[in-house]
Image (cartoon, rainbow, N blue to C red; front, side, top):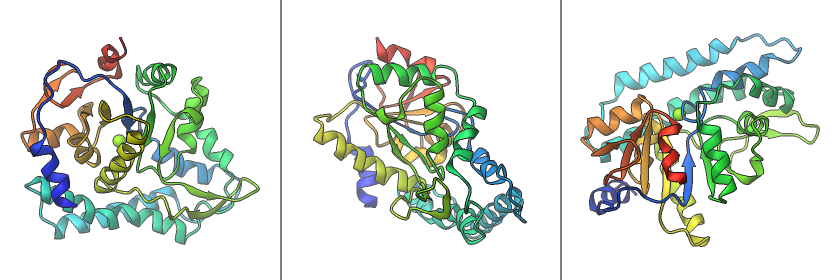
Length: 281
Ligand SMILES: [Mg+2]
């Protein structure tokens, strides 16, 4: 696995054209399509009229403690190979707060509508919705690939903006929803996307899926954070969004990238979805 992760980037030739035609889009959600929505997922558990003894900050603290502990005992990666291992090892940290939420039954009996209602608070980034809308019109496949705990808020956000979520694929974690629309408090175990290494694995599965549809190239990946980095460097065209840790990782490893969507490098950096609009012309 590691060999294919690291080796594929080094061995692949640069694309010679100035812009790679987009044939499919795989995109992160939080801090890429919209401002972070994880706190909105958490708030949904408290929006229902039922007492719950632990505040949301308890689950954030569990995560931060695990993260600080991990940082104390781990060495910073200095190669792409180590980067993959590092991301993989972060899994226990990423799972910590969710495991606590399941154990304490934070979401048990919360109606899924409480989550969907949070969509009214989502702040999408300029141009993101218009870009997705245009891709759906052009029948270009879109995959949302996210480590978020649920796709419910994302789907309702798209609906509120005039995009039918059925036209997109959601590769995210999900809560178990019972027949009456309430959550059981557990998560669906077949969906387990927690880290950058998980995202890369899922991206490879998406590529296989696209290949069956006759799409061999032109698969874009866009994301903002270090958990997007491994996928960015393995996509046909990988885009680091904004000034997050994905961009810093590109710089740390000296990976060549273009500012804006044009240029000969397979990796790009954009500040806005509007920077991608020339792909649609
Ligand atoms: Mg993100």
